[in-house]
Length: 448
Ligand SMILES: [Zn+2]
Image 1 (cartoon, protein in one colour):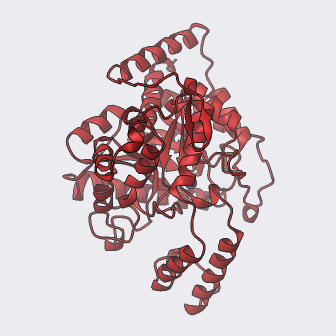
Image 2 (cartoon, protein in one colour):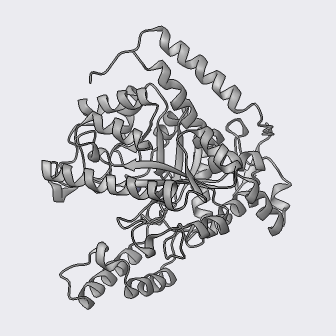
Image 3 (tube, protein in one colour):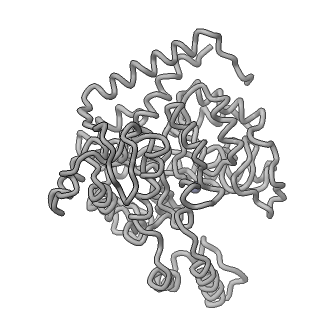
């Protein structure tokens, strides 16, 4: 499909729609952001971009914070699922599991909405690779539908629109959204994008580790023969994917993409774009994290940056990395394997006990450090363009946000720093849903 140019009056129409939608979405928002400058963590936050504004919030007791947390619509925009999800009891979210996210943990942690991820690892771009990627993706789509449409339809429902999220939440059920991670699964076929949309996917992460047909990754994969930059940003096929996603009203997710790819997405997309699970590079220099100028540009376009609770993107800990590596070698040896294989060894008793020891010896980043990242994005982009993602069951974990049952700890830290209910609502999900609504809204303007 060709990249279609919009005619001149359309940006105006879009802008009007954007403004109207914002008015509608904020109609019931009695936001009380004050123009005052407020101190937080020793730094002055500029209230023009909005910051903690409720001196009373910080004085709430634990029970009051817990009640406040329960009142919020909370959304985690990135949670991975296993290949065996809904196929084995250990990966059945309706049962008591060791997964970081299951229904019991969501309820205990007051976590209402989760974007479940159809993730496929980047492999060779040949027919066999494409076929395997497609098969793996469909298996995960099927698992999520089995959860929402069959086995647990009384407890959780799939949301296809932001309005669905609010409705399902009102009905007292948990909410599922589907996101796809890695456009490799499209196998250079735009029809697959339509198919994924029909199967319920509402965002597509264009790339993962390793370049693909759409764009360059923030992490070239040497084992696949990647050079530093293959496309120098986004390929022509990538531009077609962006155009089609605009037409579908699907969220374009730039987490894992190279900076140049993010720039190209900002250039080619007619709708806002998002980062479903990324960090702030100004606080921790890592190619997976976003620099300030791109955070600002994503926000200026109406998008949202969902900060990721992945310790390695928040702080460096080479000693922990070395100890983790050594542990994996030991486990592989125990099982007489040539090398550690997540598929077989991640769910062993040795791995579980090894991780407990590792976390004791080398603590992960804390919720406080994570919230520093949230506050950084608020300073750069304003409070309307920031959100929360755990990357649970995909490597995400903090010392005091180890699984969904501890989600209250995020609210506690934000309250401690003075954020009020309206601000918490924005950070915990409203911003994500607003960007999504804008992206859906703009699709009618992208049809030619
Ligand atoms: Zn990821």
